[in-house]
Each structure stands twice: as structure tokens, then as C-alpha cells.
Amino acid sequence: MVVQLYLDLLSQPCRSVFIFAKMNSIPFEFESVQLCNGDHFSEQYGKVNPLRKVPALKDGDFALAESVAILLYLSRKCNTPDHWYPSDLQKRARVDEFLSWQHTSIRPNAGIMLWLKVMIPMTLEKTCPAEKLAAAVETLNETLQQFEDKFLQDKAFIAGEEISIADIVAYSELMQAFFAGHDIFDGRPKLAAWQKRVESKIGQDILDEAHKMIQNPKQMTVSQTALEAYKVRILKLLQ
Amino acid sequence: CGLTCSLSPCVPVSSTPAATMGLELYLDLMSPPCRWVYMFAKKNNIPFEHKQMVLAKGEQHSEAFAKVNPLKKVPALKDGDFTLAESTAILVYLAQKHKTADHWYPSDLQKRARVDEFLAWQHTTLTMNNGRLTMLKTMAPMVLGHPVPAEKVDAAVQDLNMSLKQMEEKFLQDKTFLTGEEISLADLVAFTTAAQPLGGGLDILEGRPKLIAWRQHVEAEIGEELINEMNQVMEKAKAMLGGPVDPAVKEMMKAYLQKML
Image 1 (tube, rainbow over the protein chains, first blue to last red):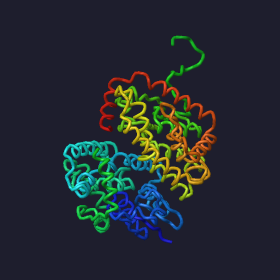
Image 2: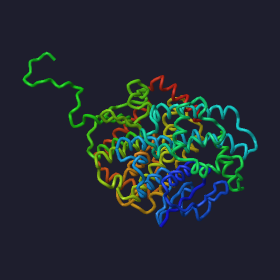
Image 3: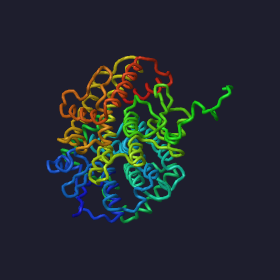
Image 4: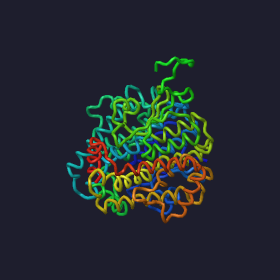
């Protein structure tokens, strides 16, 4: 039986799961959940993930939320090569450390760029207030600096000389800001070099597939239900 | 010390017994993530040197601590030359290194995934919202010199209630513990966050009988001795809340709070 992955490729954690599965040739059924369509509010999806978020996994009767949990589950179940989630305890801890840290750093601080630069104009039909954007950029810069200084340092990848799940997650989360129109690599040669290394491991074919939605975010069409939900979230953001 | 002694050599006061040499845990027990690391290590008799950190004194900003955790946060671990930040990474590292009982981080793939799922989820929900409410109700008035606007506190209460609702309906459901019939890392994390009454005696589980029952199960598993130890720590912390905060720390917190508010 093949696992089902419930994904919206506009979402960073969905891309992480998608890229990881593709790189490891893990067979799966792609179940499309379009957030812009409000698909995650359906009764049907509520049975898959009552938290109403993406990504989600279904393996027979077993349903799982949270991209980090899904990535670890797939790596163990499918016995992916050791470097993805090393059996060496200390290398593994380095991966866990990043996967934990990113929730409250890269995810919100890079992720917000899509909201400020794309979703606000789309939803409220006005540009984001300049000082709000400036503050967000400053916070993101601090996060990028911490990523370079603490997690990357002078290594090729986060856990050492080999790519791991941590790099895939970092890549997807950081690229969200990039695709939103904020060049995080400008003036950051170390980060840019790491990005190139990660992309050459992923390969252009998988990158093209993974990025087909996010590379033109301004072209997304939003349903009325989704629009209303976004408005609420944006107004909270702008307070 | 200058005395003639038949014991040789004299053992310096600061020496670490051989059994605990290597593992240091940098903790401020006012912080929930520090408490759950402490509880896990104690419960599993993992020997460690407790490096007490006082965040209110700004000790996390010292140059010495930056060598342990450049993110300047607690908890942090040092095991020989190996340093590690992030409480959930520390928990999993300790569980695996010390081969603790299987139920803490089950070897069964799906049971383990349930623990991973909760540990991932809690960052931006239960733990974050509880931390925010605690900050607004206790630290903020002390730092700002006046209470926080009621609607800010109400909004924080609402967010925390949503997290508790999800914890009950998505994670706990009709099980004894969050991820199954045995206690796991997930319960320790949730317990430390959800169980401690906040300043003002607010019990965030009030009116939630299912979660209260869960809390009792967790307390029974952890055991009275360790629970009492943690309660004493919390009492000390509450007592400190009226006390002076380091001025530099106060300034940093003011800036942080103003941004938050």
C-alpha cells in the first residue's frame, strides 16, 4: 500500500516533504489540498488532519500531521540512506536541533514575507506599510545570521559534510522568502553557496516540480472562503 | 588547605564525580523547557551536573555561556566537547544515549511518529501561547511597571484555550496519555507547560476534566518526590516575581514586550 501525502506546494513544509520523497524515490499518492481554495476546511480533510493544516500523511489507517514528524516517519519506514537522519547520535542531534529551532525562527520570519509582499496586496488591495516590512526584514536578517553562525558555520551542510533532512527543511523555508520577492542571498555568499550545494543535490527536475506553484505566487487565485480567512490573519498581523 | 592529611590528594570542591563527568545541563528552572529536561533526567536517573542559570540576571548573555549555546537560550547541554541547544533535541539525545525505557520515545514507528508529531506541534501552540500568557500576566507588569491592556491578555487566553482544545481533541482524545497508553516525552513536555499554575493562581486546565484527569495520570507516573521538587521550584519562582530584575535585563525585556504589544 502506497502512502498518501496531502500537499499544497505553495506551502514550505509541503515542499520539504515532497522534495524528500522524490529524492528518495518514495512512491506516494499526491493528494492536492489547495489552501487558496479553502480545501483544508472541508469535512473530508478534517478527518485526515483535524488541525486543518498541510502537509498530512496517511498510511492505511494511520494519519500523521506535522512535516517534521512526517519526514522522520518516511525516513525510517523507507530506510533512506543514513545521512538523511544519521544513526550517529551527535550528528542526529544536530539535525533535531535545527528541526526544533526552525519552528519559531526561520518558519515565521521567512514565511511572513509571502504574507507581507504578496498576500496583503492580493487580499487587501494595498501595499504593506513600509515600517512593517522594514521590521520584518530586520528580524529575518537576525535569523539568517544565526543560521549562518550557529547552524551552517564552515560546514558544507547543517549536520556536517553530508546533506540531511535539516537542509531540505531549511531550504524550503528560506526559499519562501525568496519566492515572495525578498532576496535573502544578497550579500550572503555563505548562504548562497549552501543553497547551490543543496540545489545540486536535489536536481533541477525535482526543483522544477516542487516550485511550479510558488515561483509565481502573484498568479495564485484565492477562493472567497480562503480570502475571508486570510483577511482575518492579515489584520492580526498588521495590528 | 595547608593541613597535613592522610588522604591524598585533596579533592577540590568544584570537582565533578567521575560518574557525572561530561554531561552538563544548563538550566533555569523557571523556564518550562528547562523543567522538562530536568524532570526527564531525574526520572531516568541520568547523572548530570546542574549548571544553574538565572535568566532574570541576564546570565544567558555571558561570553562563557555563548560557547555552550550561541543562541543564548536555555536549556543547553554539554557532553564532553559536544554542545546542544533545543529542549526537544536534548530530550531525544538523552533518551537514546542512556537507552531509557522504550515508552518515552517508542521504537515502534507509528508510536514514535505520534511523539514526534506532538513535539513538533507544541512549539508554536501550547508552549508558545502559555509562555506568552505567563509573560503578559507576570513578567510584563513587573518590567513595564503597569498591567498589560486587558484585551491583549484576553487574546492570549483565547490562543491558549485553542491550543488546549486541540491538545484534548486531536492528541489526547480518549487515551490515558497523549500518544498512547504509556507516558512519553510528549506528556512531560505538555505537563510542564500545562500543569503549572500561573502567577495569580490561574489553573489553565480549569473546566477541562479530561485534561485534569490526564494531568493526574502524569503526576502518578512521575511520582510524588519529583513533583514536590518541581512545585518547590515553582514556589521559589513565584516568590522571585516581586523581586528586583537586573536593570539591563529589564531594558531588553521592555524592548521585547513593546514589540510584542
